Image (tube, rainbow, N blue to C red; front, side, top):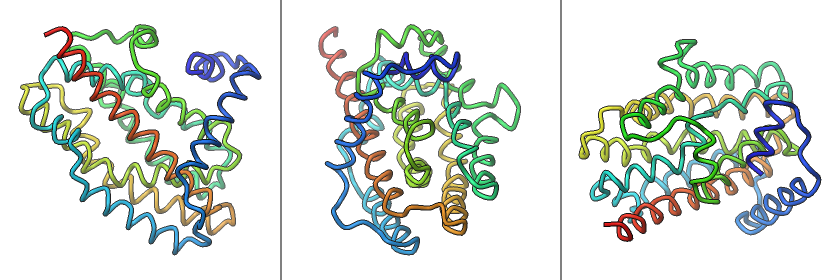
Length: 270
């Protein structure tokens, strides 16, 4: 699926029907499984649910998060970084495909986020460049093709989720919900990475520390996106909440799988 998504966005190669059917089944079954029966009916209710969920996640003391921050070895950390390289090496590039689907006013918050993602036009400050520096310090390749053969299905599900959200989901409300949730939790969640870098002596920590700083502002832009879409009548609050639940599930699975893989390989080859 990931190879087909890349081919579509880079060379306009149509995705095969069998893969689209797989994607429809994956997205619809996951959304049905993780979404509640009662969905928000307006923006105020959506914002209340978002705030409650973010508070819940901020208070969650997940063992895997503590392990990354406090105990993960350098070799394990290399595997963790490797697992998210397919995302880091192409970060936010697929967001462009969403823009024409939004009203002009709603495009502005996304554009401001993209400006930061791409280092305000400074190549060395772009988030992908920061990830490449991290890979280089850890002795990992920056060739995307390497990771196609070396990362777990859960890691690819995380990246494929964004292709679906921006290119093929029937409503941009899914994306608006996901991005607002993500940008709200990352400043706290990424602290486990910055603490691991500090503890392990990894100097190329800027990919993580930049997100801890800038995503505070991106969370504000996410709420501006929701308001702009609501103002134009484009926001489907139910689908936005389903997007939140979907994105949270896929991200949690990817992180837990990556930490588990890192710990397994360390035990296997120590």
